[in-house]
Image (tube, rainbow, N blue to C red):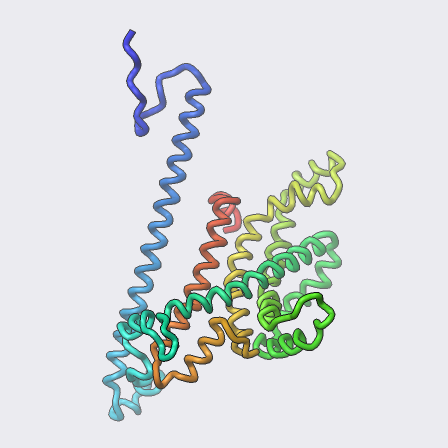
Amino acid sequence: MAPSPAHSPGAGPPESDDPIVRDQFIRLQAARERRRARTRRIIRQVVVLAAFVCLLGLAYTAYKAFGTAIDDAQSGWLLIGSFLPETTDLKMPPVLDILAGIFEEPRGTGDAFWTIIAGEAAFTLREAAVGFAIGVVVGLGIAIALTTSGRLERALVPHVIASQTIPLIAIAPIIVIWGRKSFDFLPFEWQDWMSVSIIATYLTFFPVTINGLRGLQSPRPENLELMDSYAAPWGQTLWRLRLPASLPYLFAAFKIAATASVVGAIVGEISAGVKGGLGRRVLLEAQRYTTGPERLYVAVLGAAALGIFVFVVISTVEYALVGRKGREAVT
């Protein structure tokens, strides 16, 4: 009896009456299709991002060429010379100079500028990560507490929203000074970057609280009634029903919170004068702008790249834990 030919991956289901074999083949095909769809999605996102960056560079270069041609003859026009000011190499350095500034070695450092930016981005990332972690714990804890009582929700949610109206740049120096003066009792030395993490926490907890509350309240009434029929305690209902149902909502909040933690860390470094991070770098390059304007642009691009990095990390974790169907449930 001749052996049956090997089944090719792209062919249809194998000719077998065994339901286990056919079911395994269907699962393999579905997994293969998911991998292909994910690869196409990643390629599409990379292409869109690259196209956006190229278009932004072209628009920047086009306006620079246009603004350089503005002189006193157009200064009285409605838009030209007023709303759209003239440009120079000092105000808007050429794109090629900005790209070259990534690899140049600032005087007295001996290191390429991108390595300096990378080290300071790691410092800011540590502040943002600690602030993000604390903000997630605080925000989710508040959301769980608000879920227990409708009266508590109606009483506290307006105050949670009002907390975000306080200017961050105003409270950042207060938090840093407070940290220097008020934590002598701790078994370790309180450092300024820890105060910056508290500033990042301030921006992080809000989206987690609001979306977490919405997610914890998202289970259908019949599912809650089923848990009640099993006489499940509140904690078990939270762990087995409410938290799994809230994951798509929480990850949508995590994306906002992660990028907000980077913004909070950078603003905290700038307003409080904390050294070692991207905020301090942006401030220093702004003071030295006339001697190297392209370095300020590189520092800003480094901050933008850090925000994109944390967003991609959260999106990757979301895809691994929730999947595509969970993300579509929120939209």
